[in-house]
Length: 196
Image (cartoon, rainbow, N blue to C red):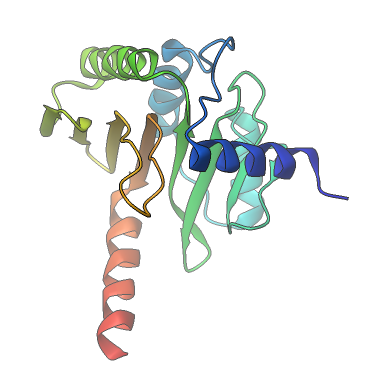
């Protein structure tokens, strides 16, 4: 039997490939305030050093996924109050290097873009002006370089199917990294790629 979260995830992926909207009639969850408050709390807290600490830390901050998406490593869904958000995280030498969310996959474009603009505005009011930002026909991109963290917000406007390429749904993608570990992880990945 396939776990409920797996079925939901697979259904959304099938809907996205077929170009069917999946967000119709559902509320936009999480709320902008929830995401901004969570990011602010995570930036202000000591990050975990072990897997056990990571699990407890995710629970403390109410971001622990209830359902693991087993097809993807360190990925899950089912965070209470976060709707169908997908949570993911990266490790470096067993320590949490970064985490993020994929939000509103397949929701109506105008709703996703409005939520993304509101989130970027609130994050700017809370964290200060982003170091880099841009808005194009493809969406919104912003990066905040904080003292020990980097925050990336991407609001993808979506695109229609192109030839054999399936459509890309509108969605919001957020990454929060502990800069020193994320950079070490990226450098190690580049070295592995170079050695191939």
